Image (cartoon, rainbow, N blue to C red; front, top):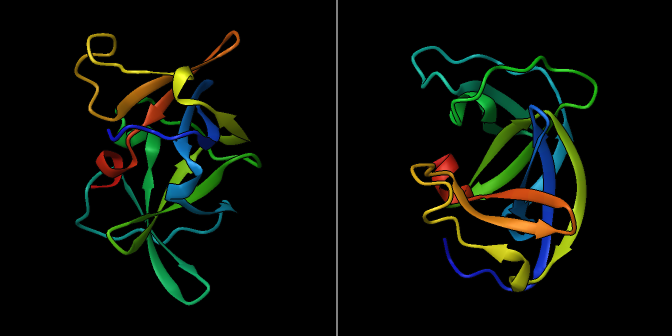
Length: 140
């Protein structure tokens, strides 16, 4: 994961655990909408949505990361990110906040969370820990 400059993160939850991605990688956050399943796709691909006339593939972040499924509810959101010019949606249980961070608060995970290809760092904020996702690896 590239060295992060000071900036903002979208903090969200999956099964009660807090994760974060850089705001700069995020296009928008939308409420849960009807997702059209597409046959013969990876098991973590929930399907596609029509976002203002554009077809956007949506991945179930729980499935993608090998976590148990969680039921969609009123707090569920789709975070739309951009990857190589393509918009991709990621279903999350709940978006918590947009938070400021400094590079001093980010710790490298090599050796700590060994073997997890999706976690690129850990953000330490007071008593909280946020797992910093490597968006490129999650959506590729």
